[in-house]
Length: 180
Image 1 (cartoon, rainbow, N blue to C red):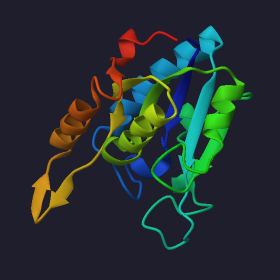
Image 2 (image 1 turned 90 degrees about the horizontal axis):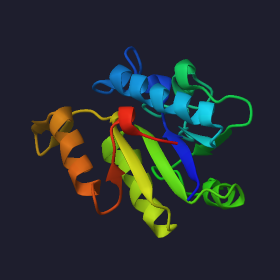
Image 3 (image 1 turned 30 degrees about the horizontal axis):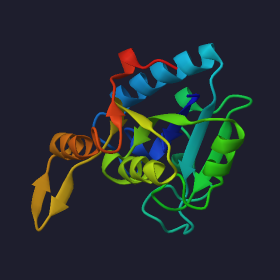
Image 4 (image 1 turned 90 degrees about the vertical axis):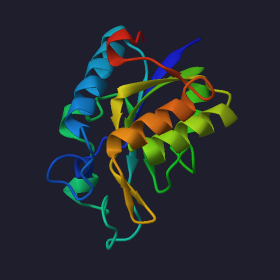
């Protein structure tokens, strides 16, 4: 199998000072950069995904704003593909599937944000495209959620979503153990 690295929504608005700050975003970025460095050194394909909302009034990832930009520490290099999406799944109307097939990628390693939304949706969609996924849990981040007035802490949200994906939709491997 030929592995490719899929970096989902590692964008400025998710980091301290951004419009939708996530819990432990900087630590997740450190792990994603570690995995990215390994893939680049091995000459393996890297695919970046950027979420941009259509509306300039969106709560975050507003078109043309610095918050919607990929974080500079993990920005695409020459030869790396960038897909802009407008929905949670990286596969939805982006051309990602066709590019993966063209480049011979048959397995994905996934890092990114938000675990409970775009990571969950993308990882589940990969199954529909017959793409096995290695998900890097320490290279993902999420935030507190509110359900019927009760705050669900980010740590609990993160664990619940990762537990639901583990084994059924992805193999979870910490950043230090990911091999390109």
